[in-house]
Length: 445
Image (cartoon, rainbow, N blue to C red; front, side, top):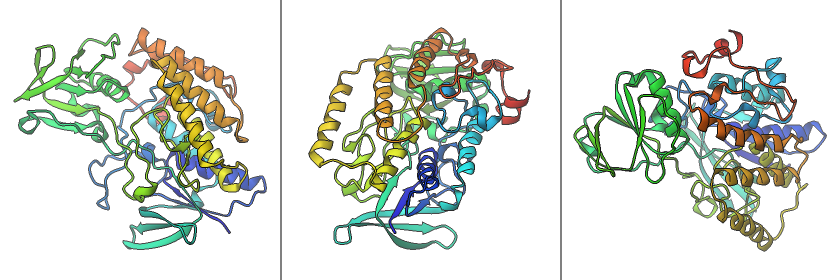
């Protein structure tokens, strides 16, 4: 019997377990599938924890989720093709749900697929190597309950740990003497902490955008966003502004490239994450920046140096859950022999073609088109159910325009499902005025 190890039970790992279970239900012999998850529950980043720094077992906290996070893109753009939101919630819901609602949706499909039985929780993967003689992977794990190590052999390994849990932490002159708090967005949990404070945020991407808005919404006195190259340029509400790159700090005063300075009480580094897999042998370890088409992954999934190893969700992302699904179905079919992996030269040439196209991508709209075509390509290779991907692409474009029109109001817009056609209803309370992000409040008031 073949054995497949899945590392992580977040959205990618659950997508992979779901893909195998669908094949099993169709009569395929999928062998033994084992998923290792270091946390005590499933959901990955969506499994919210108040903890920062180290978890209860002394390992780095995986979660980067903060308390008042809401989806920053239409839920219709991430909908599972085989498990629509309408099915899970029994009817339409607004297009921009908070984290509790999305977590409920993710685990709802996992419960329907009955995949929890394959997950070893509280089990951290410590080492993955490949034995050339046996042509098998040796996976060493540690069970938190007894702190014992054990090593098991697997024919395939699928890495589904994500890449938004190891923060990239720069340093600036004066940090060591700054009298306030400095933290990475990975450790940001509750915007209320910064009520009445003057906040400095470093970064110019989604985390910077959203944490700035969250903090101001929940009472920060002012938010200054410092960008390195290009400002986000939204029509920020009163109290939020953008300035050029931080140069240094002198006490509480932050000095910027335009010669201005501002007194700040706390600094949040929205400076991105590293692809970090210390548990994988260097010969097998993906090393890449955050981009839409990493090198050495055929179809963005298969490790070209050893096609028995696969990675899910390693791209920068517009598409998320449905892209993870398409990748997981491909990984499954590689394991099952339904998709024949070509020679190394063919794989490298295919990657080269995609990356050459990627090199010509300029701007957000090109990026959306590029990833749309990537997901479309994946879907031609397996039996993952079709959805209206052209509609999803249009939603992404409209969403970008909506943000330009109103950075505080874009979450109040409504979108149609690419799976059912259902249009999400307008929320009962505008996002900027809604301070309760609970599932009960979102669904039933």
